[in-house]
Image (cartoon, rainbow, N blue to C red; front, side, top):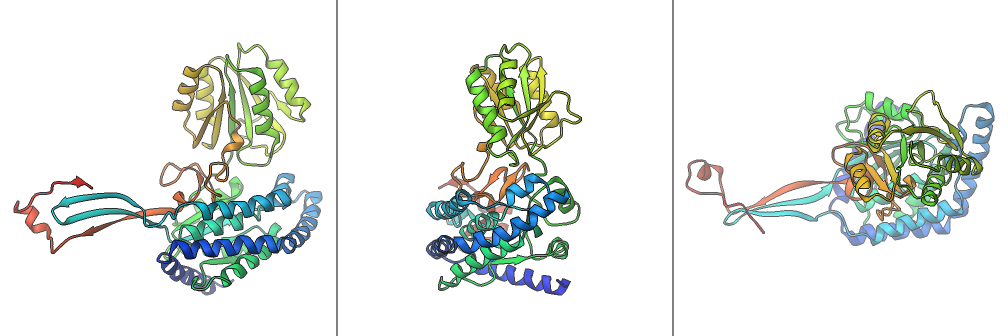
Length: 418
């Protein structure tokens, strides 16, 4: 796509973002109802398109040009389809995140300051493999009154087109819904052009591997929200219950090994007495244990788990804060004091006690869905749902108030929260 054509897309998205910012919550929900219904009614069309992508992707896997984990993310099944639709319906049930009064303060008599939630504007979403991302992000963008430009991976091209077609049909059935709120682009050149559009795009959210995220962060002036790696840890404390440890670690590694919240490193206290039993149980579940990994920064995205014994809780925390990607960590312990120290000291977006790392997910958090997991420390962190797609502005209402009166001492602020 030529540069001027992409700029035109970005300009239209910016105009659409201004229009959707002022529509009612009822109209947004009606659009989402129509989208969810349309996906359900056209699921076979989407499955047929996905089958074509899978056939082509299988050839790439055999050639070594596509990883097995990427292939697994690409595949749509009845469960993913059900979750995709349910995610939209869950978003419908959530409160309208726009126009919420976050603070109301009377600065002086008749002079009132209000902090109000508002949309970010235009989102640029670049993602690999997972085609269900389109429905999740589109629904969140509509509910949070943002416009969005989506660029999916070439390996899911047919599925992406089918899902977006079904979504747009749903929007076309919604009278009064603005045009160009959702736009889809397809080529690598589109990515390069998207990253130049700092005048029109307000936030870039990448969902993919480390190389993709690194490239985006190094090649744009637009703020980037996301995470590069999913180096997640589970620490088995000295007082850990064996059955809990086995159950949680097995789930965190095998339930969906290619997910970014799958555990990659297992830390075990040297005095915990059931280490061998645990590793035997993990291996019986098809998990390969790596006792001396080449790197503690390795994200396997497979049934492979790095293993390390540590001398203490403090050593475990130190290891995690050194090697974690800041995604999600968990401690298995019956010692509440140690659990609190761990949860207070580990610097990641999700820190759990006796829980699988696989719970790091917007759908499971009750956000309806997510645009991604953020390991940033500004604006939004962890699974980014509706709240993470809003910002705020300050409104002041008065009656001819001027700063000169306060500067000269004629009037005084009393700053009273209402």
